[in-house]
Image 1: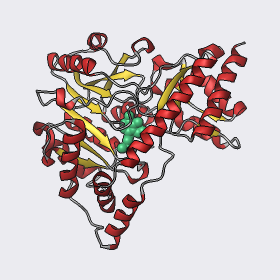
Image 2: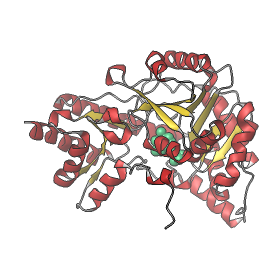
Image 3: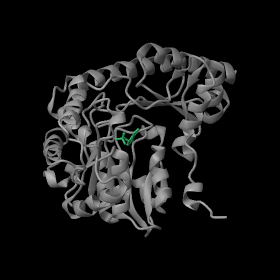
Length: 384
Ligand code: PLP
């Protein structure tokens, strides 16, 4: 009998999926597991896509995206991220996830190693499994506020290491990497001649200090930066992301688009132009709402004595639930079944994160606070 791919068979099941499926069996669940904004896509963005479809703008586009969009995105990364890129260095992808997948393909061969933090967004691991890449995990710790530290990464580098993958603001920690830490990380990358893939899809969602991009700190052209419309403009289902490559890599990254997706949905690219060039108040409004929720949740967890790291960006928070006497996974299963609150178990993000669960601040304030109160009560009762 013909056998399916070993790589795909070996892919682990997403812990987020498992909790979502359990949540479907329970009525009136408070969803703190979801990682998408509870806001609607702005009207002018929807209107631009509608107009494009009505005008017949419904055909294949160039692999790297329509010139108009690449042009405004080059302007955006110059103005908002300080990255001096021209439109030719921008590649529009169906979400940042495809940008990351295709860039990994463009810079590695099977057997290569990628330095990846524990915890990190699980899709990185999954895409590496599919491509025959080995993730080399380096731990992030709550004592360092989940910020990567070059000295702690260095021991994990081998002669097969090709890439250092960074993510700030970070999922699942909500940590933002400081300029000083980034400078050291880029020095490390130079010393070992690594590509740096910098996932900055939450670049506009910062709470204390404005986001710092890795690109402007890179004199050598080794950083590829990933951005997205998903979170910034509440456009998760539109599937538009983009990346900035150094000139030496652009052609290879564009080449990978043809077999992977060929191009991004044409009306969605017009919607993306409208999002970037239209009113930006929506972005600040969403950021302010997440910040207010962060403050309320941190205050509540502090009052209840649940250990956590205060997020400085993105819209997630890691809470240490070991006080319940259970692993994050057992706790998350029981929490959804017995208390009607869905959170993501920490082991989803890496083997070093089993004491944690991740909650999302992208849920409306009232259910969010109710969910956190139930979580805190469960830690105390089950741990008693
Ligand atoms: N990178 C991180 C860290 C994410 O959390 C996500 C989505 O949750 C993505 C990338 C994917 O974004 P997109 O919707 O643009 O594919």
